[in-house]
Length: 261
Ligand code: F6R
Image (cartoon, rainbow, N blue to C red; front, side, top):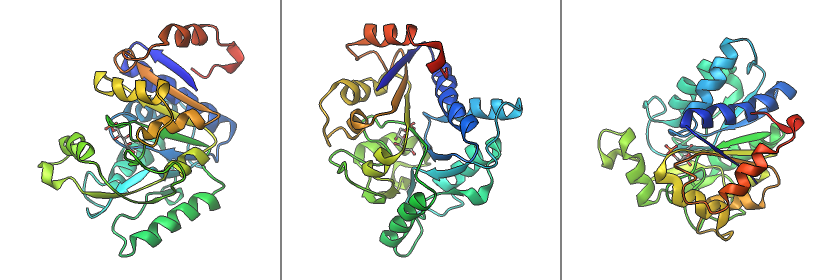
């Protein structure tokens, strides 16, 4: 794993956007896995800036959202379909017909999940997957004890996740109890992963994921099994890592030709 520790949340967004921009510059029809929540907002803002500056274009890129709540209407402002449309498709200029979100309103959720998984495969797999991390170490909505072999499926949200996400809803009870999420196996199938985290509230999860044992109890520790995972954190999210000197030294001595940020 490459661990990048940067001074501010804005630096995190810019650096992670650089990783994604390099993939798209090399392959304009790249397949991008799209996370929602607060963490990737800086990435999308920086990518939108690059689009506006004419540095990069997403019109041929494909997108697959990481997850979706079950049971809220698509047009709900907090559905991930709405958020992806608002924060990603529009500002980055994706072709909406090339971006998919799991169908959390499907009458047969199991079938919808399998079809979503099949659609990712049919698109040739994900070139780069954007990830945030939950305070309990989840990625996507793969809550602790999710199987490393799991593919897109229905999951029950952990109570901690529902509490963390209550800030997006009028009342805590409004937070859905279930979701469809790409599995840990789906995420590990992506050709590259970039995980971002900002703030002290993510420090324990980052330390456990990066330096703890590989364990289904900390789903993000699955990244240790991936050959091309970049983890970009600010100082606060890095504050419980032990090998920070090594990560900084590695980054400072990274050959120019390898740099995207
Ligand atoms: C969102 C997702 C989640 C979030 C995580 C962190 O699509 O899959 O794993 O990345 O819950 O959420 P924020 O970024 O809001 O702290």
